[in-house]
Length: 348
Ligand code: SF4
Ligand code: SF4
Image (cartoon, rainbow, N blue to C red):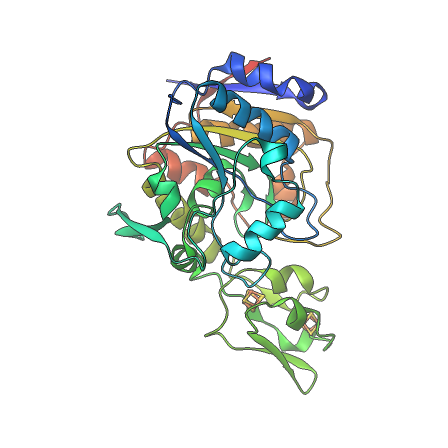
């Protein structure tokens, strides 16, 4: 059976509150529930993250139900501004995620240094258990607010990635990224050092003006791929991205186990790279489309994927990442019972 997916065009984004109320996707929220609202606070310098003015509308609806909402995210595995709770809270505050603006507190879900986790049994192809940030696990209900855009490893990133990768503790993120270490073609290296500067793991260095990698230190974050202008770094596209996508979905199964959730995708500032990048060139590549909401995470991502491609006039994601079949995540999520790719789009 098709899942209902609700759509608000970007030009009517000021009607977000009424749109969400009419979609009735928050029926799972009850009084005195702790509601984890999973967002991305944006790496320093990034412009694509979903702004507090929109997040606050979701908070408002949950508070009207006398629930206890909090905004949350988990630590990154690269050493940026979000790799521990202390710095994560500072950047969230800097980007405007304050109680005054959003109407609720921020709680980093996997603790001070990213090791506060809960191991959930899933018994799937890649993982028997998954390591989930504990405050996501502890919350009574979940709401995912995701920025739908390109992604350097999964082709696109939306709800499913926000659930699976986004809710993994540090150990969980390591496990998902495990295979995605790039290879190096030293012949192409110009010795400029840009990758060394952006590798927060200190896995890269220059020797005789050529880059070398300490694979033990590499966590597969992809920063070097994005920051090298000379295409020195490459992922084994036919092997790694499908496995990473499947791992993310297996994590999503663990996160959503025994939980009631709702999902909202923002199809605006549709960039090539994710919001973990602060690159000046991480600009929007097409017109903003709108906001998609529902209670089926697969249908919400499938509808978002279709809406972006339709607005672009051809397959946007194939265009920016021809080597990646980004629909692997949708197919595998459907196969594992997270939802259906079959949806009915209801326009507001
Ligand atoms: S950014 Fe590219 S060209 Fe520059 S040092 Fe690194 S690998 Fe070499
Ligand atoms: S070598 Fe590249 S992929 Fe590995 S940690 Fe450094 S920046 Fe990330």
